Structure formats: C-alpha cells, structure tokens
Image (cartoon, rainbow, N blue to C red):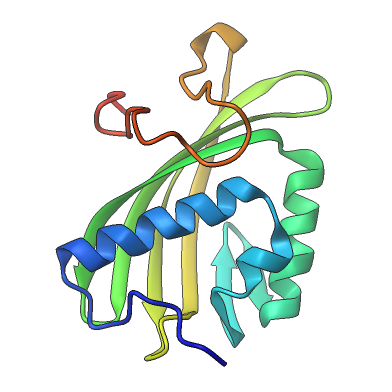
Length: 155
C-alpha cells in the first residue's frame, strides 16, 4: 500500500498539514475515503464506543452521519511529538428534529511509519445551540481557506 504523507516524525508544519488533511477528509463525509487514512488494524475510542479495524471505521462513520446531519468540522493542531499529534476540534450538526449542536472535543492520534493513523482517542461533548448561534456556514464539504479557524472564532 502507498504511504500517506506527510509522514512521521512530524514537525509543526507537517503536523498542521496532517490535521488539515484529516479535517478535509471528514468534511467530505465519505466513510470509504476516510477509512483509507487508517491502518487496517486501527483502534479507536470515540466517546464510549470502541472501534477495531478499518471496516469498523466505515460502519461507525455511516452510523454517525445518518444522525449527525449537515455536519461541518474544524480541527486545530494542539501539540505534536514524533509519531503523535494532539488535536482540538469543534463541529456543528443538526438532528432529524432540526435541533442544532456544537460538539467540542480533543483527539490524540498515533501514526504508523507509512503515515496512516493506528490509534485515535477522542473525547467529545455536545452542546445544543440555536440555529442563530451557528458559526460554520460554508457549503457542505471542505472548509474554505478563508473561513476562520477555531481560535479566530473564539472557540
């Protein structure tokens, strides 16, 4: 299998680039595409759910986006060291009743030498928000380069 640059060990620039690539992939909401960024035997903890392997990643993401509608995500590099990156993020979504949420969290990532993520540990909290409180208004898909990030938005 081909490598997934940038490759570890990460410096600040390559870590920030890896974070943006992950954000772009998740904003695509394409589980098959996203799963290719993970090792075949990747292990996750996402909230209280445990995911083992690439096929579980696909199933997890399909379930996620069947209930988290109009999903838009921003990730920001928090720290990096060697094969590890720490990220903070927020995403907005609505449920099928029309209630909007902003979900806040932190992720710890560990990468294999080929640049695929081998481990992902995510802690996430959901806050109900009014539609007028939304801050992520770009069309579905990749966040535009000129859209503010989390720090610029005061998040």
